Image 1: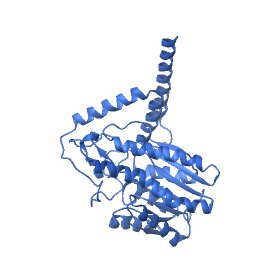
Image 2: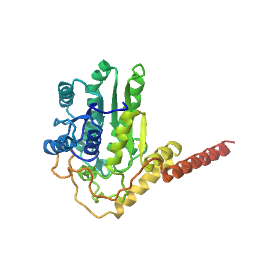
Image 3: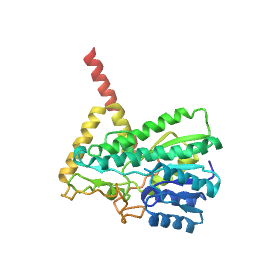
Amino acid sequence: MPSLTNAVVVITGASSGIGKATALAFARAGARLVLAARRSEPLEDTARDCRQIGAAALSVPTDVTDEVAVQALADAAIEAHGRIDVWFNNVGIGVVGPYWEAPLDLQKRVVEANLMGTLHGTYAVLPHFLRQRRGVLVNMVSMGGWSPTPFAATYAASKYGIRGFSASLRQELTGHPGIHVCGVFPALVDTPGLAHGANYSGRAIDPPGPFLTPEHVADVVVGLVRRPRAEVAVGWPATAARIAYGLAPGLTERGAGAAMRGALRRARPDLRSDGAVMRPVPTGTGTRSGKPVWHVRGPSLGSVALGGLGLLLGAELLAGVLVRRG
């Protein structure tokens, strides 16, 4: 889709963060937007901002854990525009803390929103893509879909699941060359998402950053629709995580665990909170939360250096194995 003028784009999780930034990016490209989120007022604010740019934008309050509501979202898009060209499964929530400390209903809701929400959206839009013989499905994964995320185990489970689902579905659709399934794997992004997550660690969750901007991730999503690819990393930490875990999974697991334990020990004490996992909260309606960000344009020196380091580490480990076996 080299031109997005009048393309019909459905975005979930569009009331804030990456979803809001992506809606505005597609609006500037001339697309017609159908926007979904649980919070009706912030969602309508996003739609209004898109209209001010000059794009058609419809807000449809939707809880992606409800398959009937997601089907109604697809129906609303078809009724308004007659087709769907792009569907962006973007909702993401999490629980931070030892797995056994957080209530099981919170852990289940993470899977229901992240993984089942992606399945619900895909199930609703795929019949339209098949009928049209074209369409782009973009699934928000995370660098946590490539490597472990200690103290956010259920979040990692949902993201690993989305990656596996996307890769499997892609193969099922090989007979439909006009339909594309894309996965986006960003590093840390400055959005209200961390504040919206549940926190059962007993510590304040405030990673030092720097963070990607949601606008950069939005540009990547728009670029994927123009030129679809199976998987794309956003930010060198995501690339590094993929290489490191692929070459040295045990070392990467231990390193991630040690880093998270150290960060939690250094963090100030904080109260436990369910965040916005079970029900929406009024705060956090912008694209950013105000953390230090860095701007990425193309491959960075850091990504090249870490990639090379990962390859050297893999070669060293392989050599050690061969020497021991020899």
